[in-house]
Amino acid sequence: MTVQFQANPPYDGLVAKVKGTFGPHWIEKQRLVPLEARHVVVRWLDEWNALPERLFAESEVEVAESHLSGQAQELVALGCDLTTLGASGPLPSKLRNRLRDHREYQGARYELAVAAMIQRCGLPIRWHPDKSIPEWRIYAARGGPEFFASIPGTQVRVAVEAKSRHRPGALNVEGTLDTEAYLADVGHLLHAAEQKDTQGCPLIVFIDLNLPDRPDVEGKPAWLHQIEVLMSAYDGPERSAGFCLAVFTNFAWHFAGQTSVLTRPPASLHVPKRSLRELKYPTLVDRIHRALEGYGVPSSEGALLQG
Image (cartoon, rainbow, N blue to C red; front, side):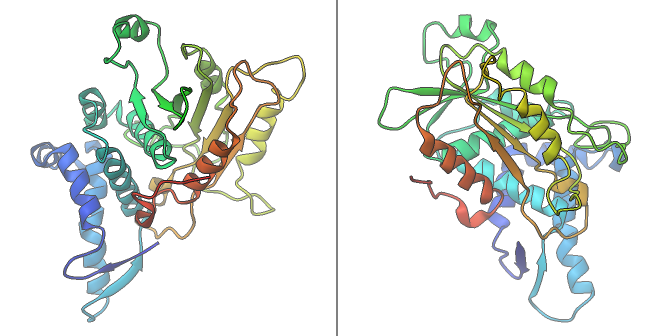
């Protein structure tokens, strides 16, 4: 993706959405703490301001065009998701607070991304617990999924769970990432998702690997084979999966830092041969696939995927 920096940059509305969600007072307080302790969103905002300055320092033109850096792309994607969800109402206050929290940000951010993608597929969502029903306190205590989504024109709901793999040195997590040990290691997250109380609804699981982009010798994502091995355990006739669809993503532009990003994040979708509760709407899988292909691209905002 490229962005033109001029008098009214085309993505300023998305960045303003991020600023409004986190709040100017909170942002300024974050800028008073040391850089290494600063929330990643504020670091991305600083990169957004610095990117055009770097471009214009290298050129005397009035309009500069450049690919987004990894950090700037993270900011744009966040703005896209906030805009999509904001069209149907305010974010739950708990989710907004988790986005501001260093330790909670990663999980909350991925929940936001998944919810926005599902909504772009044309499915209205209700966050768990759904306080519009009398039994919401009972369901809240059972540990349900992130949210439920309704299939338009039917009485069918699907449960959606989102998991993001925490890595040292990434997304507010302390430590240093071991770049040599390139392991997907998300089997435990998939198993935990299967234990959620879905109230009898089919379960769709999204898991983000949170790994630096790295191709194998064939040019495919280096983590893809590990995911295929993980999912092969569900291919046998003796095992029924607790989910009807597993989606593995790698939304990891942040690892690129100030380096330009030129490719879209890969994803891998898996429908198990047998499921405890099958998804009887295969077109939804196609919609999710298309939503993933356009993820983080502002031009796709507001467009519902049909099929």
